[in-house]
Length: 268
Image (cartoon, rainbow, N blue to C red):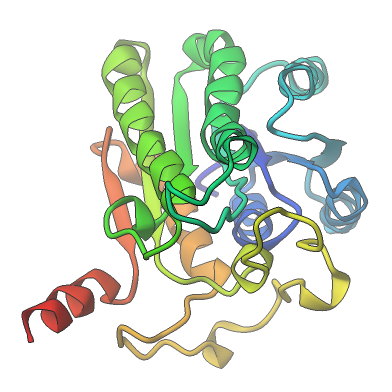
């Protein structure tokens, strides 16, 4: 197993990309902390993993609240003795241009999409420095090629790339790597509920089935393809594991050719 006994916290691990990452990391032997506002689902997934002989705990956490992050870090260290990796996979869509986005919604986007990453890394870093480890942040292709009308979201996700590079540069001497994934359109609760706020993103009927076999996925390479959470989760495992030990400070674009298609369309 690539990650046997390594302690990995997945913020936003109860649904979508985070949930797929949790399940795939656990398959590689990691001890998982699932931190999510949807604590019912976080605990349910942890229970499923325990029934399979794996190690996991589910914790309530609003990643935009500093004290919640501190509590997750403290509980993780108390439960497992340390931290070897972080996956930051929380987000909220805020729709609007810079002109029509109200300041409270702008701030909400920064708090959830960017400041949450600062909180988690700030409080986890002293523990990561003891062991070395890997940080994986989930940004968006919109950080690179913004869609019209998503100014706050694209700005926050772009800031995440810069923060990731800064951490990669600041902490490599401690054996800590930091990389960021920029997915295209993914079938997740967030993508299915592009609203000005996050109400409703945990509707049970919209949750992704993480156990669908690989052969049932749409794997055709085309720019219009909607990715599955597992497409991203497999790359999360790669970046957390030593398989990617030569990668630090990179953004990986997983978009099935979206950026290329956008460029080609703009040339026509």
